[in-house]
Length: 148
Image (tube, rainbow, N blue to C red; front, side, top):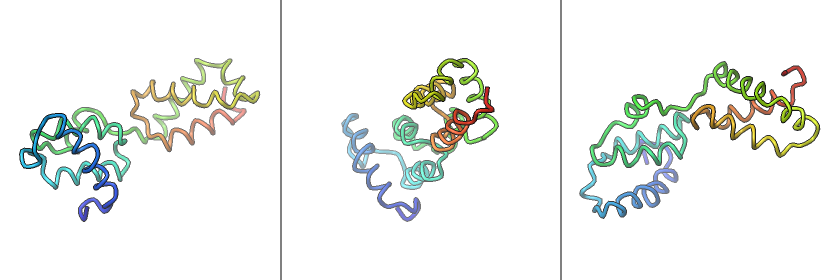
């Protein structure tokens, strides 16, 4: 946890997902090849908002047996979160353009449609768009009368 700077995050992962993965493989912790440094690196990727917890859960089984560098692995697999505002806005514009009636419905007060647009954005980005940045940008685009 010294290397990750977040003891709570690390302990939750060790007690939760890490042990769950070992148990599902019927492995003792001594049999695990993953180094403390690479585990810490996985935690840092989450803290730096480079990957989501969901992505980390999919990466853990892949790096566990061979002690792969998680940063290198997520880069090679194209799993880094999309944080580029221009790229996110391009996706938002496409989704809003493809769903003009739902945009009008949202602006007419059907605020529950926000979840539809969030889902469409996650689908468009294969789940790789930064949820905090994209949610803020999506809400701004939907509430802006100049969009569309």
